Length: 132
Image 1 (cartoon, rainbow, N blue to C red):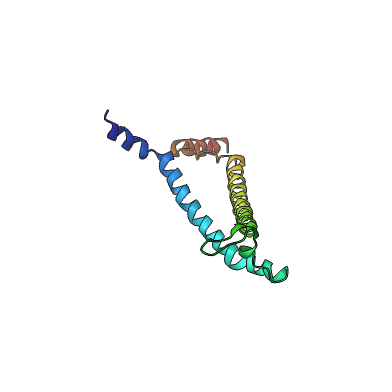
Image 2 (image 1 turned 45 degrees about the vertical axis):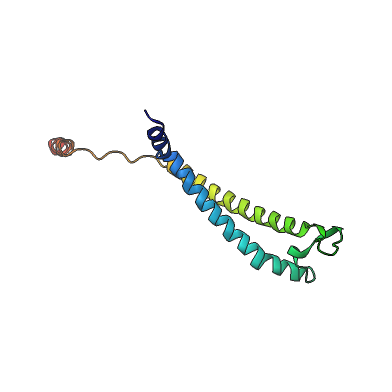
């Protein structure tokens, strides 16, 4: 088996395709949540705590000089990324919790008994008629 055909067989397996779809959807979801946090949530939080813009929060470690930018410790971006992470983690937790709940309902539901065949139904009717 050639290297290309082995790779094609590997890449087309269901798990790899599912993983690729999950990564793409996860990246898109991460962008959506980042936009939500940076554009909506953090400005509101900033106003509530006195007009603070979290993206601008930083400690100057070394002041800038002519032609050289200052060295900053940007802890505001860390706070914003932490809020992003918490929201994403919570959303994933809720999604997994719902999936587990649905899976448990399917496992707990007893299977329906199979309908008797036409022959069995006819024989049952004949038996009941003979009993009368």
